[in-house]
Image (tube, rainbow, N blue to C red; front, side, top):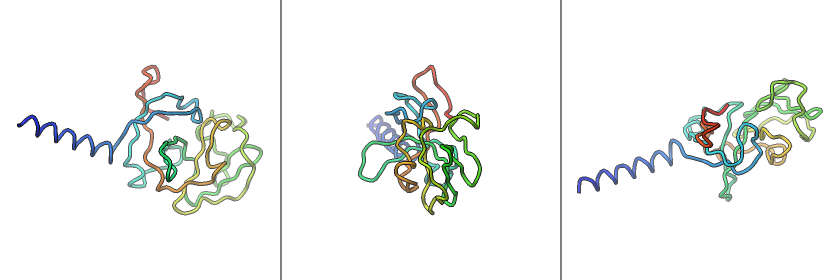
Length: 167
């Protein structure tokens, strides 16, 4: 009977960890290449969104209400930030943003729609895929509600050839 108690405790601890602390997620598309590729298995920590520890540059996992599939994108602007796209380049608060891109200011950022003076509303964030040409993101549907964020991708554990922390 003692072994039954150990199994019950292990199941409860496992449930607690997966529900509140961390979970595994599989990348299902190419929108985050080259940072994350289709089939990558990543560890997603769930405490950041709960305690407001998210910032520009974090790779977040979120789910639209009513959808079962989770999406992975990069957080590029937080509430109150001013977002502009001029000549296909992203500017946050008036400064060129290379978050998730090669560190070369003249690198094309994809076919981003032109707009100016979008201020990210309170309780919202602005997200983009690193693969700007193949990403459905805030350039398509606008900022997303922070409540939709389920976690922050922090570690890739498969494939083993790309094992390690995620930038």
